[in-house]
Amino acid sequence: MPANIPEQLHDLSTYYFHVSRRDPANLISFVRGYYQGDREPTLLRLIQMYLRREYGIEDVINSWIDQIEHLAFERDLDWLSTFEGLLAELKERDVDELPVEDWGPEFTEISDLGLPLPTYTDDQGQSLRRGTIVRLGDRVGEKYRRTKFYDPQLRNPSWSLFYPAVEGFPFTQFFHQQATDDLGPVRLGACFPIFSGLCLPIEDIRERDGSVYVYTPLFEIAWEAACGVGEVELEVGARYEEADRHWVADLRAQLGVFRQGLYTLAEAGGHPLRLLTRQCFKYLNHHPRFEWQRARRSLKGEWYLLK
Picture 1 (cartoon, rainbow, N blue to C red):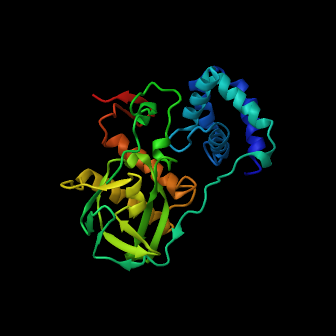
Picture 2: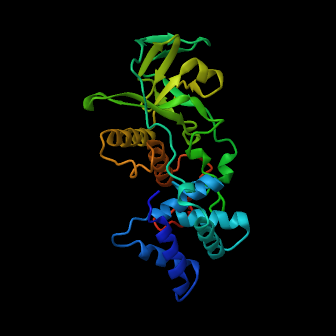
Picture 3: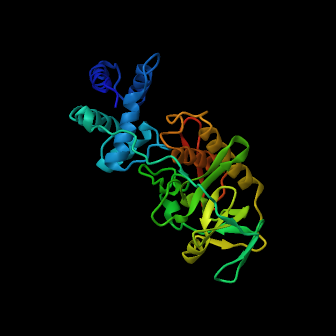
């Protein structure tokens, strides 16, 4: 963590009490002004990481303002008192105890995809080939009720649908390769629950180390294991919808840009999975694809009901 964090904490804690009108809107305006010019917003990033690590409050989709609102609800306090308490809490910590970005490896390289299979009949007698449509199972369930997309009035929403989940898709991994730019095959991590119900075509089937892997435009699926727990199924008569095609193409492109070094790690949010989280939110916010979606967020950060 940068050494100037204690200085920024001191400045904000001191200058804040000279603000003429002490309310959330004026304070937020003051803080934003404090970081204009040459200053890097390292303290705001610290606040976001701290609230994620210490209180489990999501920090990619939530701004630091949203996170403090969430904490205020949990503590049954107003926003301003919560912010003041948080600054005091941070000042009591040694710099070495403050959080740093702690995500794991960016990608896992796949040295050999294995033996190509033109067709494959699985343990359930289902026949797979290139072009066969597979559907991801339902890992959303009732969890949508805890999202702002369903209830925009929530002050402590859950964003777990936009991250790998324990009861999610462990056998369906994000996958990327781009032969035209010499970007070899890599897997990134488990598919997010928000992809539930997505239909995708099979692009490749491979056998490796005694297991069969199915490749779609975005995922590597350990087929038998995934089928065994209902992560995927064949969908007779289903289509790869045009809107979903654009969504998947955008995600693939974002990963390609990152892997070519055109995004810094900071611009990706600290990890390419966080880049995907942000892109998934943007897509869902502009292109509702679930029946339960009732709200979206404006460019100003305000949530409103869909008509």
